Length: 473
Image (tube, rainbow, N blue to C red; front, top):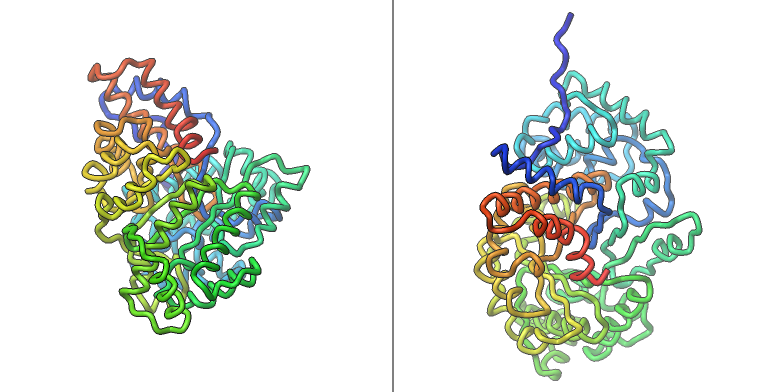
């Protein structure tokens, strides 16, 4: 008889501290939060998936192709992106099966990564897969998951309910008509809450290719002359109001830095016109973007949209890959970040404004304790954003809690955000965060720095109170 394949069954105590006494405390804390609803105030799931509620076509397009966390590591291990379906649109079943085989044959590359943790949780807890993926069982696992995907209980809306998602935020272009959100809200059979997020990056980067076309589209959408800087600003204000009317609670920004330096209106107007004509220098377009980030803060004070910043990423680091496969294909690479001086002009003006909520994320761990926690520990408008992207991992999340808590406490943190395009990974990511926070709290209890009833209350607040407060949910 051949040996049984290695089992894939997530351990009930996974991610808890190894000390038996501390682990027992963590278990008790986790029981208080494990079934609480998921609040996802920042993500990238397409709302049309839930509107159309069509069965997912295959395991690869659901679990692999849309998830750049997965594809980038496979690419680094020698698997070409085209063999993973990246940028290819819908795939024939034969190609989807080939993508799945690639994942299973390279399962070892994910050892000790958060991707491995998410995948194990998804496979076991959603699809009942109890074998560790390998080249030998790839087809069997593919067939089993495909069979499940044909059942109504595995359609998008059914999974949304099963995952316990209370709020799901999408990320949307300012000129999007938000018709999918409107149709969902009007559907009497739909009881979930899916809200748009205003993401104006490409409209603020006057130095990037396509900016002039984006500004023209903004004018067409609003009926406002965006050939002037004043009209361009009014058009952005108008689109923010449109998003708010469709349920938006936040505006999301990601630029190379977060410097916020004002320009005289005459200079902003001059650069705006020069950029539309293709005659602005890099220094000028950067200055205009920094001025506009300050303008976005002003708008948030006026209209109440939460302002989230996650800077310091070199987008599309590998030009040939970006040209062939487009953005968000796994080669955005972090750079060093600076917040204290960069945000001072913004915080001098608006840091104590009662209507501003400013959530600061980073990929540079050195600024958690040095800059973000002290800012959140003074300014009532500032929240320390959860570990994001490359830091959305067990050890980094623990480091975040230890770096931020002593200066800003727990209440000045944002609550977890999953930042994912991979729909089925949402519950696994949130569960990971809950387990890790319970572990950190359990250690504080064991060290007699926190009473257990306080730890339970804090664990619940991190899941249910903090994100509602920071993101005005």
